[in-house]
Image (cartoon, rainbow, N blue to C red; front, side, top):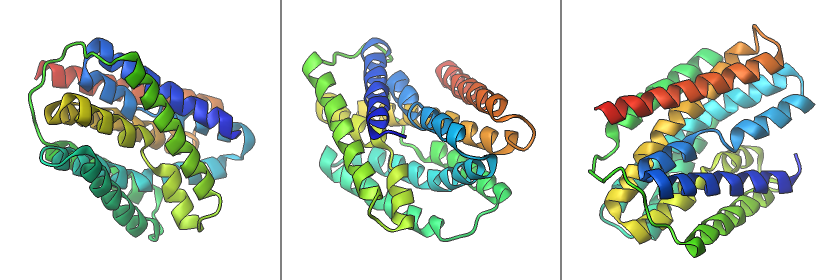
Length: 252
């Protein structure tokens, strides 16, 4: 897919998540940031150009990388409670690449990958720090919003270019790097503090449940449905799971 389309998707995702944060608070912005707002459309384009087995292999590889994304979010959240954003960012990416490289060498089956990612999601939600922050509108100046978008596009461009020349295992991990999970928490930690960053990342973990649901549903639905029906079903499952978890957390 054209790199400009990928960069546009990244910019749109960061913009939507930031505007949601501005209107509804950090938790909602994080939830939207965790959804497959970038990977979902990219997967749709991939499905148009590739046979079903290739799409299933990509979905499986994505699921295998997701525990590393959860490790990234957890590390950033705990480190942000004591450290500045740049140290939290460094620690989070060390955790991501260390776990991601370890997982990428194992030949995971569909069932193994599904169980791995579901267990990781449950443990990740349980291990997230808890800090109280008001679920209210957040002031994000227009300049900061523009900086968020530009930084995210810059990170995405570097990843796309690096993935093209790195070895296969590294390229796969680079393409799985949580771009919004790297950009949004840094701005939140710097401008709104540790508690707001934790709220954002807890929301991100809830959104990631929708991400997980999307790729699990796609992986298994492709065996029983046409590609178009499987893609629509995956989005329906993802949005349902993320919305249900958000409502449940709000009621708690």
